[in-house]
Image 1 (tube, rainbow, N blue to C red):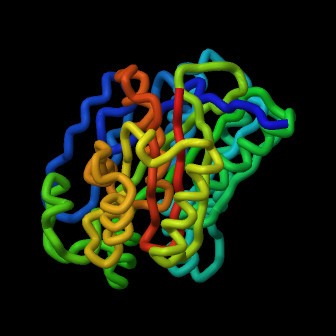
Image 2: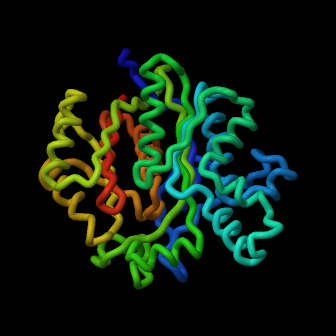
Length: 338
């Protein structure tokens, strides 16, 4: 069975005003570090006050984005809950590790450990919606969200589900920012997101976010035609993979109306985007997205959300291609159509 898969609804918490609707791209202004924080919504309409005070920031963001996605889709209980995350709840992990050191491994509070597990957001969503069906979490660095979507596509194609809640989430903390800065993940000098692509320096700007989608076999405005992942390709292998991916879906590069790229402003890795764009899409409208959300393992979820917003707002966009990679290792294409 080869089912057509549509995006029935979505919701995003990011550094943009993406949660309340009416998305207008607006790069934020950074004051001190190359780090973009998500603009968190008012959680009171989603989480009971007695639970809210016990939950970490990542859990609040993930659960709230998922619940808003279900509301936007007019769905109460999905047939499956599948998520991807690169790091899980960093805040809880760091707190638990600090407690181990502070209390010499004695009298530890188990709550941070429980909430730091990668699948804690999935569990909270399932508890909140009383969903006892398929529940899975993928932790594959820059392929985490992609594998969540792939798993959802497999369930839908096999006829084992009609509506799948799939999402990606990651957070940034001060400690994680410092650790990754030691291996060159971030730009050394303060760089504003508006200058990300012209700074011409190594590293990027850290980001975070929680984005969810309801993938469905029921028709909707935007169709997810396909997904392709490539691990550590050469430039030539990447080109061959793109050609094969487009041919598989019976489209050519000229059929793409909008190309959304994961350019991060990192001079070590942006050549992948420049080469592919000049070779296959010299006349195609191209838009980067990481000056809006920052770089993180599941940033491609924000790109997918942005593509859906653009296609819903602009009927002239028939086909949108997303190309993103995570520090030159995990590369992925998403193809959307009507």
